[in-house]
Amino acid sequence: MRVLLQRVAQASVAVDGVCIGRIGAGLLLLVGAQAEDDEADIAWLVQKIAKLRIFADAEGVMNRSVLEVGGEVLAVSQFTLFGSVRKGNRPSWSGAAPGPVSQPLFEQFVAAMAAEIGKPVPTGVFGADMQVSLINDGPVTLWLDSKAPA
Image 1 (cartoon, one colour):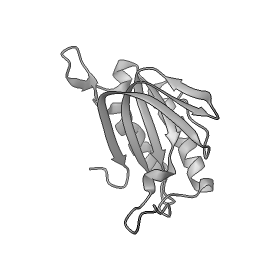
Image 2 (cartoon, one colour):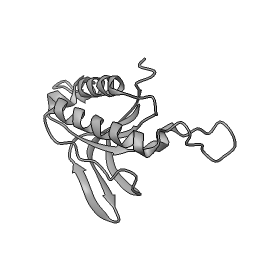
Image 3 (cartoon, one colour):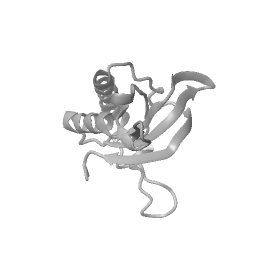
Image 4 (cartoon, helix red, strand yellow):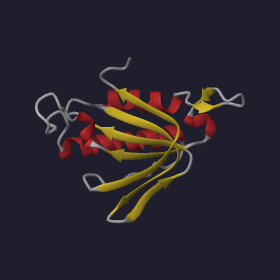
């Protein structure tokens, strides 16, 4: 699984002009899955994300996690994280898991993230055309890949 993580002052996701998920300060997670992803990938990502020290402490140093600051999390499914542009100018999506595989993985990820942070994790609508708005705080943007956990 891959996650593009952004520390945000606020974020929201809308479908057909209707806001369906909104958070204040915390993390916006764009989440993509491959067919071979499983519970181990979900567990690694959830633990890493919850414990990343990317929020400022009293001295202004990035030394606190989303758990420690009581931040919120918004998760949006995004198959394009597995797009390949190696050939030509039109991305290939063959690396992304098909919907019947990726939707349950995304739902498991969201449930595990909510359990880890102790609060609901709003989402978009799986497979829908969504509009995501955010105010990136920092900016802080990180790429996490469970198959390359370096």
